[in-house]
Image 1 (cartoon, rainbow, N blue to C red):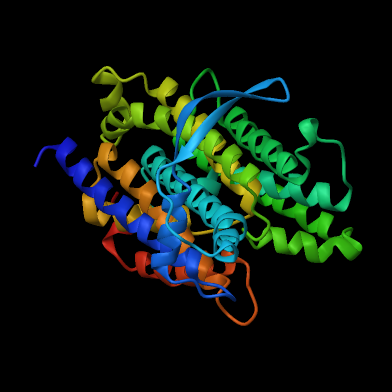
Image 2: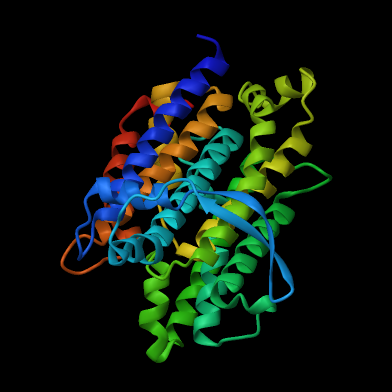
Length: 356
């Protein structure tokens, strides 16, 4: 089957899986809502523009619902205002982490690489914990999430600048610089936690990763920050395939290796920061999902990147549903780590650890 046909088939299947996971997840909680009812609520939410009207002198788009299934208002409120923002934010974060993990493993040609390898997660942690311990002004009222996003971006570019000499960024140097910066920032986070006082519970909760306080604003902002960069990553998937042959061979085949690495690193840092800033540190999504999908669809990044991203969305929605389904909710980062650590150890015993 041609790559485009395989991509279409796999994407359609994974999108169907994601839709099913979202529907089931939206029904699970203290108040059980049957999936059929959730489906009706979601269908009722589909609207089409029918014109433009004036509200208080301001032009606004007039819309009309495509469906009008009978649903209790309480159930509609629970699905649309309580559960769906959290579920969709989980889907966006899982999408971004899995996509970034796929790119990192391709750039480093190392199956153990994940989005945190260039210091993004550690930088976000410093920004978030620093804001919790000693709140400071963040432009546009973005608060803690803005601080985490800025910290992630600054850390990623610091690692890149440290590893770059004479216009070249060797992968090995980048990897070691990332490890060193992560270690340093880890020490900064530990120091900040010692100064946290009564705020330490909030800081630890953020560090464990959670989606509890998701809002529609978070969903729309994160979606915007992830969607555009993801399109850029898709454009570079062919170049990334060639780079798996080695940088010298890729250069000989006409790929501008250094420029491609810069673009991929920068864009991956942005979509990782977008996810970490709203959800905290959620480990192993960017490590596990690309491996699973690589085993299923193969190493062609034209297929692997979009399928891994869709699978990451389903994975994080499912694990977050598990995290909030017990008698006491636990941070989703604990659940992904509990599932990811055994898988990581499994990889250490397998050939895939040594060959991409």
